[in-house]
Image 1: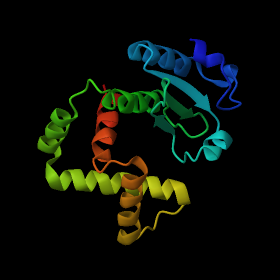
Image 2: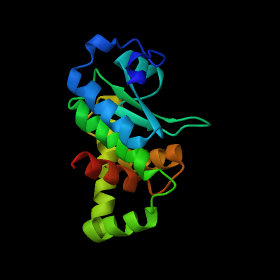
Image 3: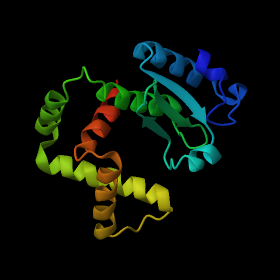
Image 4: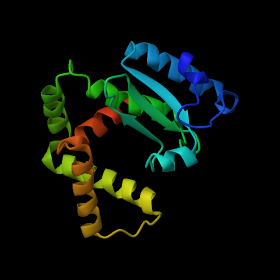
Length: 168
């Protein structure tokens, strides 16, 4: 795939990317039909871009969306690629988000949704600051930070969709 030779987002060399990840990226780009491009970056570039996790979906502004995969952190790169592609699919304007939210509400109920939100925020903050002993107030503040950063109070549904898509 064309994107694999592009080093615009980092100095990750094509030869350093395992074949299974290159194939998964190519397959997932074909699935998206040009809606998004998958880029491999290293940890240094991820830090420059403010990415603390294994990958990030970045909505395009006038161009294709970007899916950035940190090859230094992605423990299971194929799952990370699929999870981030799940975000791209969820954010497609043709997707019935209200229907998906209703489905997740039935599957998890209100309590379960809030629990998953806390789990995600706790893991994300722990990864960012390198500390596991977080207080409930720190987790609550991080939930609000994520909500503000994404400008979306329903961000947990995109995370749930990404997780379920990656499990397919």
